[in-house]
Every structure is written in C-alpha cells, then in structure tokens.
Image 1 (tube, helix red, strand yellow):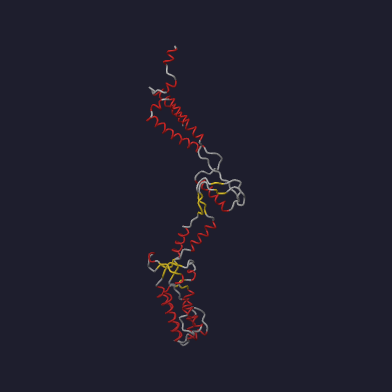
Image 2 (cartoon, one colour):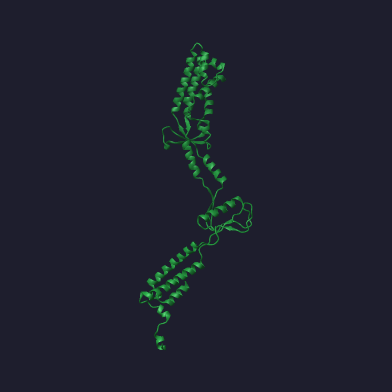
Length: 358
C-alpha cells in the first residue's frame, strides 16, 4: 500500500465517527460501541457508589455499659412498656362513664307488687289465727319475730308501713335507683342515663350523687316512717322493699363495654418519636429498660423498612437494582443526545470525552 493510499484511507476513529451506511455490521458496531460505554459507566457507578448499606444493631442487656454511641439513622416511634399501656388502658376504662337504661315502668311494677304483699297481710289479720297467718306472709320475706307478728295485728301499723312503702316507691324510686354493684362501675362520679324507649340522642349525663344506690334507698325509705317507730317495724319495711325491689336504673353492660373498648382503643401506645441523627444511647452510658426498649423499637423499624443487617454484606439483589437504576438514567441521557445532539452522538471522540466526564 502506497503512502498516498494510507493518507486517503480514513483512520479508525474517523470510521467510528461517521454515520453507518449499512445496518450490518457497520450499524451494529457504531451503536453497539456507544451502548457498551453506557453499560460500562453504569457498572462503574454502581461499584463506586454501592447501594445503601444496611444497619446493624447490637443488642445490649439491661445494666451493661455501651462502648460506642448508637445514633438513629431513620425516624421511628418508641412504644410504651406493657405496664404503662396497661395503666393507660385502666385510666381510659375508669374515665368512661357507664350507661344505664331507665325503666320508668319499675315504679308501677314495684308498687303493684307491694300492694299485693300488704293486701295479703290485711287478709291474714282478719283470720281467726291472725298471728299465725301474718307469720306465714312475713316468712316470704324473712323469718319474723314474735314481736313483729304481734305488731302487724294492728291496722294502724300496717297502714303506716303501706304508706311509707308507697311513698318510697313514688318519690324515691322515680329519682333513680340502681344496684350497688352496678354503681360501682361509675368510678368517674358520672353516669349516662338512657331513657326508656329513647335512642342515643336522648341520653344525658348525670352525677353519681343524683342517683340512689339500693342501700341509700332503703335507708331513706325508713326515714319516711313516723318518728318513734320501733326497729322491728322499720326492719319489716326494709325487708319488704328488698324482696320486692325493681331498680329504675339498670346497667347496660353491652353499651358500657363498647364505650370502654372505644376509649381503650384510642390509648396511645407510643411514648416518643426519635428523629434521624438523634442519639439513642451515648457512649459509656448504662443500658436501662427504657433505652433497651428504644433500641428494640429501632431494630423493628429498620427490619420493617428492609434496612436491618441480619446477614453480612449487601445482597446481589441490591446491586442489581442499583445497576438497573443507573443504567436507566444513563440510557435516557443517551437517547436525548441521540435525538437532539446527533453530531455529538456520531463523533466517537466526543462521546468518549463525555463518558469520562460523567
């Protein structure tokens, strides 16, 4: 080959920097070389800038001293301890007033039952063996004493008892009387009363002091007796009321349980928020139960986000994903150069320079 022919023959750089005339093999070589450059840059970028390494968390027993500071890499919440959650749930339960259903029919029903009881006493007092018959009627409520049987032979005594019982039902029961055990649920000093036949819109909150317990009802009923009434007669009134009692306020256990479950469900189970860069445990500090719980919460948060290093090193999947991301970004850049800077794409020297700059 003469020197002139060598001069006229284009250099290798020039051949690779001219648009190909044919798809094979010139086109494959022309475009393939540029694709190889992109693949090489993507691979080199992935190696030099590896995917985010996972974080290892060392478990420290309570009471030990750490030799290095533990700093949070991600934000997370520290849950409350079991004792603190139980205490908060107990407070939420106690702060929820119980719901009582009002039974207005209890006044008429209890009054009718007492009328029948005193009616049987009146009938027994008219029998030849009145004292024995009165004893049989009284035995339905308690074991009567001889003094009580003799006292009820007197029509005036029976009338006093009937009037006192009727006043107790009409005046006191209508105020609202509930079982002592049900009222023990009103730890807040308040309770919700739902009228008979009314919906939730008709509910109202009343003070515990505005409602009588069974014990308070019986005590105030005895106060309705005339002064100077013997204890035996007062005891008959108490026993008659106890055995014929119908509470005008009845605890609605289903509604109360639902309300308390809702209050307990609203209890916050996290104690505090930890921000990135915040020291969880400082160097040379002793591990407490609180700091141990914080480290455990940090470990759970890292595991949930897939950042906890449970095995040494970074997995191949992380490298593959990072390589794909780098390749996609570089391919988009290469397509922009191909479509909008064709002269730059065609010139191999410029492409190589651009690759080195990247």
